[in-house]
Figure 1 (tube, rainbow, N blue to C red):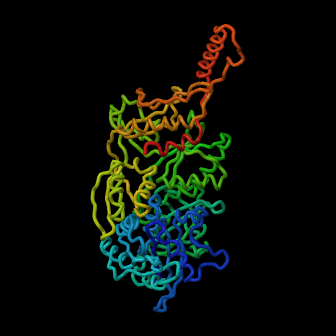
Figure 2: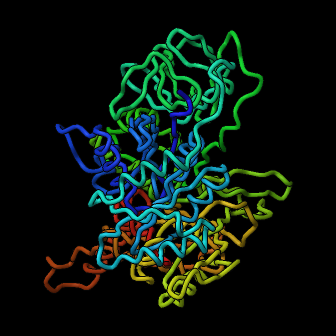
Figure 3: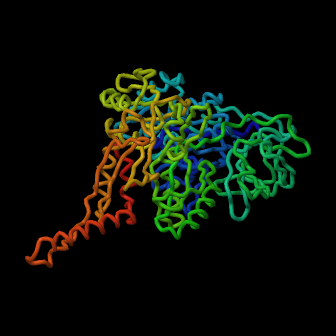
Length: 598
C-alpha cells in the first residue's frame, strides 16, 4: 500500500557518518549479508572505500516493522557529501519526501551541511536532524542541537542523538522516518509519470534506469516514451535493490526502483527526464532538475603515445557510468595526442583520473586545470573558452568574463584572521559574516572560480589547521581584468603551460613559472631560452645554460688560432643545433605549474 511507503535520503557534510549510518540501517533490517560484510556497504567502488567518501548515490529498499505493528517499505538513498558531487544530492532529493540531516556531534554544522539542507528545504522535504558520533569523548550534542535550531530553524527538541558506529539510537531513527516523513502522493491508476533519477550502463542489460514512479504503474512489457529524447521502447524488467538487484512484477506510484528497456546509449536516457506510457501519455512532464554543466577543464594525455587508443576506449567506457564529465580529442605540440575533459570540480577530476589509471592500467599526464570563461570580441561576438588556446588575439578581445561562485565558509573564531586574509588574497568580496555561536563564524563570500579551483581548499585547511569547511555554488559570469599568459621555450609557445590569469598577478606568476622550469628542464647541448609573455610582450625570461664539451683539451700549446678555430666551430654547431634541437619538457614541469604563483 502507498501509505506504507517512505522515501528518504541521507544528507550531510563529508565524513559526518552518512555511509556508516546506512550500514547500521541495513544491519537492523537484516539486509547486511554475513558473507561479504564490509564497511560502507553501499559504496560499490574500491576507490570510495579507500578515500572514505561516497561518489555515486546508491538506493536500497528496507523492510521495517514499526512499533505500531505495521510493516513499512523504506526506500533509502545514500548521497555524496563533497561539493563536487552536489548534483548527485539533488537527484536523490528529487525522489524523496524527507531527508535525514546528519551532523557530527564534535564538529557541528559545516558548510556542506548547510548547502545540502538548503537543497532539501527548497524542495519542501521534511528534514529530520540526526546528531551523530555522540559516543566520542569530545562530543557536544547540545551545542550541535543549538546550531541546528539557530541556523536551520529546526527545533533542537526534534534532534535524534545517534552513534552509528556503536549502533546507538538506530531504532529511534526508523521510528522518526515512519512518523515524521509523509507517504508519497500520486495515483496508481493515473497515466504513468516516472522521474529518471540516474542511469548507468550494464554490459549485459544495456542502460539501467533508476526511477521514482510519481503516477501510474511501471511493469515489464509496457511501451514507454521518454519526453526529452522522444525515444519509444518497451520495458524489459523492473526491480529494486535490497541491497542487491531484485526483480519485481511492477513499480507503482510512490515507489523507487530500477528498470531496463533495451536502451544501449546513455544519451537516450537523460537524467531528469520523464518516462510516460506511449499509448496513454501524461499531459506534461515532471519538473526534473537543472542539467549538469562541467566547470573545470584539463587535458589528459597518455605518457606512452601508443596508449592513445586505449585512453579513448577507456574514456568511452567510463563516460557510460559517469555522464557528468565530457571529453573531446585534442592535439598539443608539446604533449601529442590526448583529450580535453570537462569536470564538475577538482575532486571530480582527480577521481576520474585515478579510475582511468586503476581500472584501465593507464599512465596519464593531466595539464593545468582551467575554468570555463567567455570572451567578448570587439565586434560583439561571444566565444566559449574552455582552454587558453581558444582565446582570440589580444587586439580582438573587448573583455573576458569569468565564473563567480558564492562560497560559504564555516571557521572557528580563533582562525578567522588567516581565513579572511586568504579570501582577500583570492579576490573575494564579503557578503556576510555572522557568529553561529561563541566559537563558530559563518562567512559568505563571492569568489572567482579560477581562484579556488587549484589549491584553495588545501590552503584553507592549512591556515585553519583543518577546522574550516567550504562549499560553493556558481552564480554568474562577470567581466574581469584577465590576460593569457604564454610560456615560450626557444620562442615556441607551449600551449599546455598557458594559463588565463588576473592581470595584476601575471608578472609574479610568469616569473615564478620560468624560474621553476629552469630548475626542472635538463641541460642540453644548446642554450634553452624560457620566456613568459602576454601577447607579444615578454614579461620574464630565464635560460638553461648549455652543456659544454672541452674541445681544446687535446691541444697542448701551439698557435692560439688553432684553439680559436675549434671554439668557433663548436659555437656554429651549437647555433645550428638550437634551430633543429627539440627540448623534452619533463612531466614535473607540468605538475609544477599547479603550485606556481600561489
